[in-house]
Image (cartoon, rainbow, N blue to C red; front, side, top):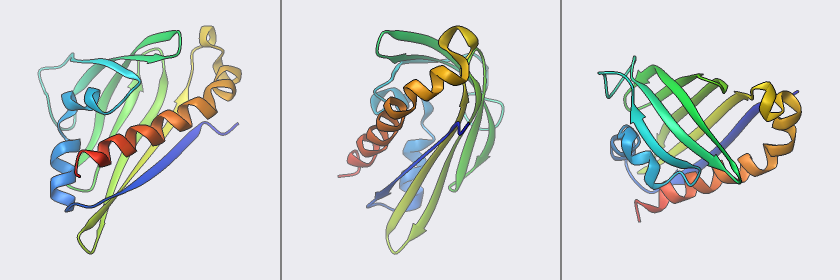
Length: 144
């Protein structure tokens, strides 16, 4: 079963500016519609080792998703491991061309059994795909 989601957006801004906003983790709540709150659960607030608890809401479902940053390569990439009830990984990759930046978001997710496990993921896949794409569009719009 495919558990990978990938979406991308073209942003009319230099890669350094895009990275600076993306690296501001606590601001993700402003452009991710499924995120209600982000709380740091580590003393580190930026870079590898940063650990956050993200209250995520999709329809009637709410879950605290615990993530730990495993890669932090300014201004090119960052990635997290989902280490709470939801398992998997998430990555942001930035590339530049001309004066624009392409931001790619990749998620690989496994839901816990009580949220349907692999079957639950099949059911929510179209919803998550739309949410992730809309989130990136909202992020890109902050550069207008």
